[in-house]
Length: 363
Ligand code: SAH
Image (tube, rainbow, N blue to C red):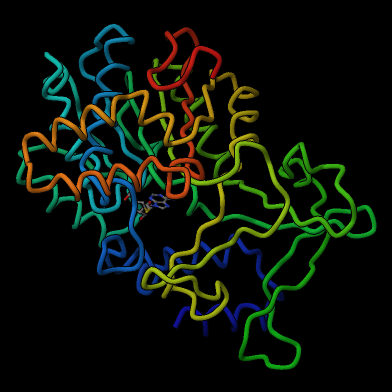
């Protein structure tokens, strides 16, 4: 079991970074949460916007097509999705994109997916539509060229580290064994971050003793990969995820199993582990890396600007028996009490493109 292997590592080498714990729990090739099965769906562990409603993926497809036009209709266009889950979003996006003349013929689809099990699910979702997709494990391995890159609930499962300020110094909060019961994991305070202090969100750097900060090295790697790619070829990446617009202190590590919150340190590999995306730091880092950034805007505002209400009305008119169901989907995607305000959209682009659809002129 993953837990046993991690405990053996701790006994041998001392406490582990939370990022290591998360990476093993999610992606251990034999027992990792994502590595072995599809966890996304009403009967599974958690649900996401593309699985709630086809409208979500359709609007992403129209956004991608608009971006393609903004870029001067390059052919081919690399349409790349990071962490496609079931593949539902890409299937809906490509179907909607057919309404835009020339777009379907221009796109080449790449799915960046770490999980072998999910690659198979994505293949089954996309094959009926006749889409030829290619798969890679990393963004860096996707084909070069002008690109639109999409990622829904991708950043939130990138492994995070945590740090606590103590005696004026940031120290890593790590995972060790419980002092009274070595069968259990427990958080322990580790060594000072040292050179990694640069990963602490700028807004929290001078916070008082006792403050807990989350560090998101994975976001930085994604930004750096985008910056390298967009330095050579124009492109634009859209991320939608949950988290605050401004960096916040506190532990946001969350485990979800069977749609219920669970203890993140119990039975790693059997629950989804995520942490809130820090949009302020993501944007600051993207700008420092030479990218244009728009957002963050709330998912509710973003989808509304892209026309989700008109799409819901059209779908209801075509399927009168599903009117109530479509209204419920719209509510879940856009209402403030649902995904509408906790979830945000952010757009990171190569320099010099017109403002992206769905973000206001200042965003
Ligand atoms: N976008 C989908 C799935 C979200 S779950 C949806 O909205 O329904 C997160 C997805 O990202 C899964 O497909 C997971 O396997 C993938 N993933 C997470 N970290 C990854 C990484 N570092 N590289 C590639 N894929 C990753």
